[in-house]
Length: 430
Image (tube, rainbow, N blue to C red; front, side, top):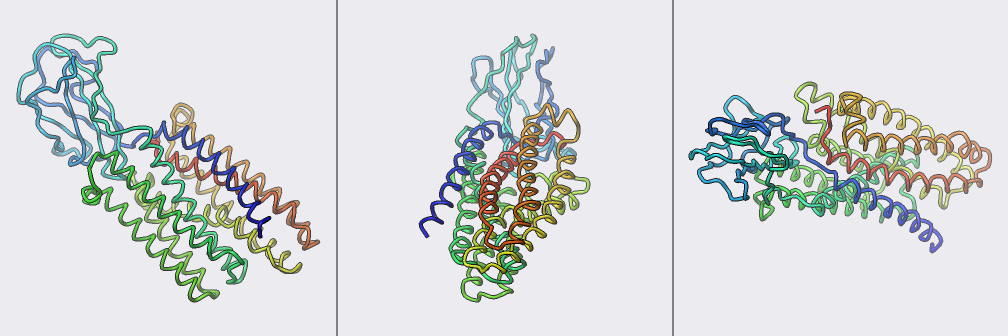
């Protein structure tokens, strides 16, 4: 037992260290998805007459109730006579404030913080314009309206990563125990299932707190009254169903129990996908959501199934080990193909162009993820063409397979961390 815990410990430790570093690097780049498309007055404009309103148009519909626009003068003092934020009639992507007092000659900065009504992500920015003069370079005055920090971005990315890890373990348990192990929960598997739901709940809790802090509301209740808050509540409800399925596996073990676990994990994934990037495009939204859902479920079966393969091999006789490895190899080959096809389709939809791939933070992070997935696929191919035939010929020759599978697990954790970072970046295609 101690040897098994030691092996699992160093794999988990390496994965956590790498993932923690990657999230620390990527979280600082995490941005929101409602990007500023146009502004009136425009950035760096030199107006002859003071404006009567300030209109901002974004790439996604903003939530006027939790979005802010603040106008300050060159010294950073708020301008008097600025109304609250309201929507623009006839433009769901627009926000405006009315200026009830005329601005005098000088340079002014517009600071904005926008909460996307589609996925709840927060975007921030500032620009300057002049009345009776052109703003000088570097004249933008940034105020404390932004409610963003490295800590918030880190908490959001870490929360998404834990959420993905927990759901992947649940989906992997359902697939491997149900389809490969013939309904058998391997020794030590039940505690892993329990911890998986705990990890997912902790991840969702971190994401919720990060969303509350980013929006700037003092308590959770005002957050849950927003569209993005209802999406978080829906994800929480889906995790409650997953917890019920875990109890079912505990109380009524049998071949049908993993199917219950898989169904609830798939539902939680669907709810999560419906609150993310795939739900943003107006055209083909159902297709994008379905593709992303299939992609996430296949990743769960493939990556989340690896630890269940290792646990399933323990305590099995020679013939059973050969059968289990062969069955897992077939399932992993199918799910890998699904992951690659759906991943490519989603990448095209999110990136949109070659420039979007090479010149945006999202695109460059996606390239890192693709390289990691390629490495993971390479290790899978090594298993399929070398380790699996060895085990088929000799059920006791599992050591190379176990070592490679541990390497796959460490790399898979980094892939999920990269996905968590990507989920917090603005896709250039949208």
